[in-house]
Image (cartoon, rainbow, N blue to C red; front, top):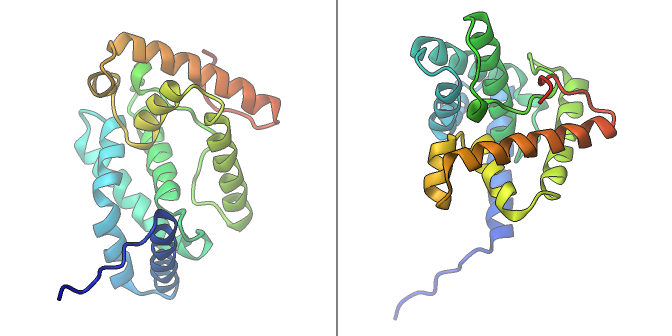
Length: 204
């Protein structure tokens, strides 16, 4: 007789993931290099893809940004909430990649421009908490967008897809994707400013 297999619900899987991440962060905070290696194995592809999408044509700089980001993760593991490791790492990679691109004299085209809040440069406990609150606010604001615009934003800002890639996935002209990204950024910036959160991004 076949043994029954217990299928976890999404909420249960997320809870398991948080518990695993809590242990990983705890071990890193205690100086366990094996835990850092495990985090790198789990998130390296994501970090490299994000850095590469910003620093196109500069692979060595992208590699340095990723290395710096994982070093920051090692140094601040004790300040990261379980379940928030990937978003935290993504913000560090993205902001440091943007800083490196500016230092190189480069500019992001419209489809690669990103919504920036205040820079993340190795935050302390208070700054980390503030950044977490801002991230939650941005997530709530995204819920005010239409389902299609929200899908475009998630694909672009969370998964690093270009306008062409999003257009192909959603059967949409890339120029239309760019327009929707531009309108969405403007709306989000207005909503953030209304709530007292300064945006480092340029006027649209």
